[in-house]
Image (tube, rainbow, N blue to C red; front, side, top):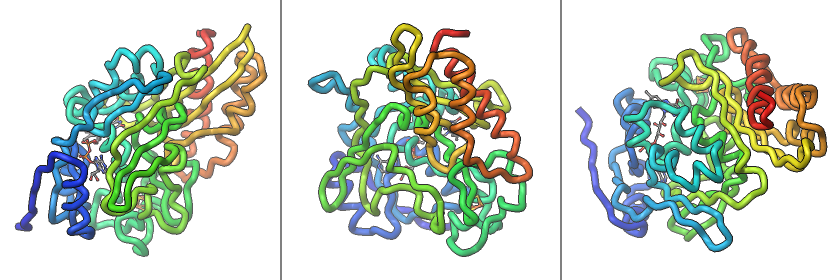
Length: 329
Ligand SMILES: Cc1cc2nc3c(=O)[nH]c(=O)nc-3n(C[C@H](O)[C@H](O)[C@H](O)COP(=O)(O)OP(=O)(O)OC[C@H]3O[C@@H](n4cnc5c(N)ncnc54)[C@H](O)[C@@H]3O)c2cc1C
Ligand code: SF4
């Protein structure tokens, strides 16, 4: 048996102090729905759990000017059902409700969802080669069963997909992250936070050791109120995305004034497609244009034997999401 220390803290300075005292083996725990799973599988073996649930980060606040600031400990269910989120950012509410199960959403937090690890089966099985879990050991998924894996942003070192539905909505909404660490506070655009694997799949985000996510801010925008999340999966619930699309459109007399497009299930990070957005802006909101945008979004796809179907699936998911958002269906 392996001993694990546990401490509950009530404010950010105390959390940071505990984390920085043992930088190699201490981790924050929020809802625990991902971390405890990985500990049971021996994928993650921290020696100290710093329970951050007592931190005052469980509120959704409206800032002057109308932006929303969401605390990192707001539960996924509460965020999905928050009246301001449902009304102004429906894509976020829909993405959250498409994830996991009601019980998991009641525990899962904003910060933990952003940082949840890949569901790659080889990553979760410590007997398998995995560059993300153990750099330099290889990637069992490349020649293995890779049906759930990414087709965008992959590298010869890793093809794991980012599993979060919520992350896809946040990258479409121009969200920003507020981080707090031993060296102070900083803001990071959500779109820059998750990293592609490249030669270092073990580096997944810009978060530094000992740093906490404290908030996510959603700016006011002309497009967010007309937005949708569409997820395609093997079962109607309790399954990760094969392909998903988060889209937002600002329309003026049938013409697209502004657009946001992001894809899930197909990218190594939450995948914003500025190529698709460029193909839409200034054009008529019709199926021809939506198909052109979907082709642009998947242009750089690199497939493996079992996941080639995802390219067409993602194209169709995106066209349907755009058609629903524009009111054509
Ligand atoms: C059976 C099952 C099905 C699921 N299906 C889906 C699905 O369909 N779609 C989907 O999107 N998700 C799904 N999930 C994943 C679920 O959404 C995540 O497990 C959850 O969001 C993680 O949040 P948490 O608060 O429990 O994180 P935790 O497990 O507490 O933490 C996760 C990681 O984040 C770190 N962390 C947590 N909070 C902070 C913070 N504020 N600052 C810094 N680090 C922090 C922890 O140290 C840990 O490394 C599923 C999970 C399960 C178990
Ligand atoms: S795809 Fe990435 S996470 Fe999966 S086995 Fe390969 S290196 Fe590991």
